[in-house]
Image (cartoon, rainbow, N blue to C red; front, side, top):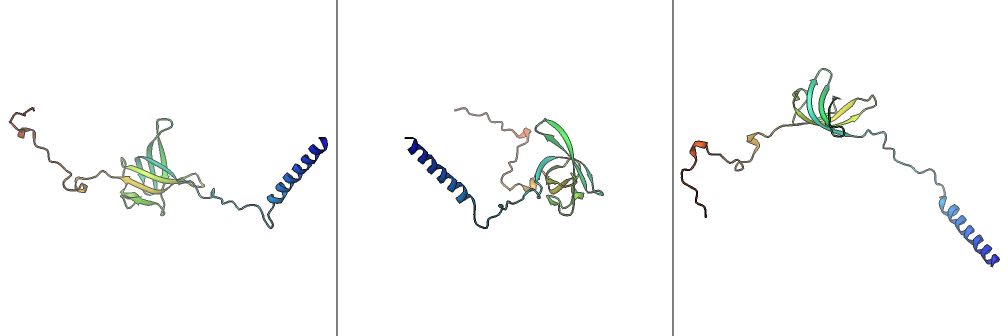
Length: 150
């Protein structure tokens, strides 16, 4: 019985030894190449209200609500030539009290660099398709006939 157990143990050891060394090495293989995405900064997003616009220094100060602490904070963004705009053409068209949505990155100097600034504009009556606007009657033109209740 001891002889059978010893032989079985030796066979298992040889099989696992072969599997470990035989399949773990590839001919000519080197360390695996892993893509390094850490060099590209993460794009962050913020929605808030413009406090100040400094066109001379290409800066924008925005007040936003920090949802984790329920506190209003302010953050300064730097704008450059690569910044894109939606609903405006440049930083000069943005004014305090505008609501903005900003996609930004934190650069190596810890500046908040705006990649895209979208200014939210309220819809005007001209933008609403005809037929969706219902005219209301003035209060003095209320029908004088009594309503019939079925």
